[in-house]
Image (spheres, helix red, strand yellow):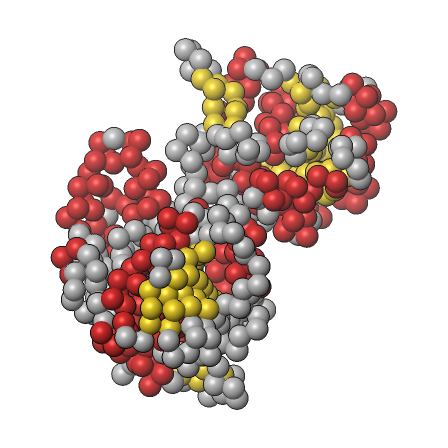
Length: 554
């Protein structure tokens, strides 16, 4: 019985508690083991070889296990078996080129990654392997690299076959190198990557760093990228893109026409529900090494502190239980703002909608929002949005903001305005498009009273004098609607087609509060955008003003 089978048996018997996603992955792997029609087969000998290398040649460098051999736990052996054991029948190259391992802190991620990095350097039968430990900051990138170098120093067999320099490990017999790589590195070009160990993906703001590493793997026959990370604050960056990709892959296992990528292995150790953090029986879902590498008693202390002090909760959920969260000062938690429900506007056939706009000239996004209800379900509010960025500034915004505007543009969530400024008529044209394409008429539209006068006049010419309503930006106007909007989002009564730009904007919203607990939105950071939330809020304000009349039109 191989380690995948052993681990699956422990899951089935209830001896280990795992997340729904982990269970689905190992169910899929079990099916692959007996699938003779598959392009791939499982080589138990090859899988065991990697495990034996790590346990024989790699030793712990610090803590209570310092100097002792690394003995891998069953969940680690199963993961390694999957990474290295599934091979192409024709080429015998590895199936999996990217492994995404999300697991809570203090579960031995760095030790595991260091051992795998050393295997790729010394024992993977690759000529001139280039191995990189990758992180956004040099200090973070060197964590795995330093652990790997210490393992080598403690192993006579590896030490005599290599030379450890200040920032590089050189392998004597195969011309291999192992380096730490970050956004701060002098050069990110010309990489020929055999193995990349990407540490704390949630902290990588520079998508270019990830792209450079992935692009550098194309010349190798069987490169491996191992992504290890805890959860981070949500900003719809590269972390969230990879998380959503992993989710689609897992969902696709049981869907004939679902998303497929046979080269990516997602391993997401996380709680299935936020409220499970208070249930010790569920803690292992995010902490597979609980009780061995990670102290259950210390985790219990953290949980009890968070129960008593709410300020500690977000960090605990994010780092110890792998629950996606927003920044500590954010207005909405990820649980509140997240809604993956979808709708088809042409099937719903709404007749009238209420608009909202947040205009910019150059720096920020410009947003147009259209919200509507249907007679069949008046409790639900549906949201359609579009965003604009000046074309001349597009690449600069992608690079400087480190936000995937380019990907959102390709998916149709963002449009470009010609030149270096926003053409407000493009916004007007979008509302016209919504009317002509989907037969939804603009009943009212909220706008910041400081908006460009000619935009307002353009909208009035197209949709009527009574359509446009100014929304004064201040606590007096926005406080109550903003609190009501929060309640509706929490209750999952606002469906926005899982728009990633809106989700990102909502996660960036903080609040300015006065002594009477009145609020208005502001940014959690100067460089982040909240325009999608601002446009939605303006529309929501106008909806509440005209609710009775609007419902009579539905």
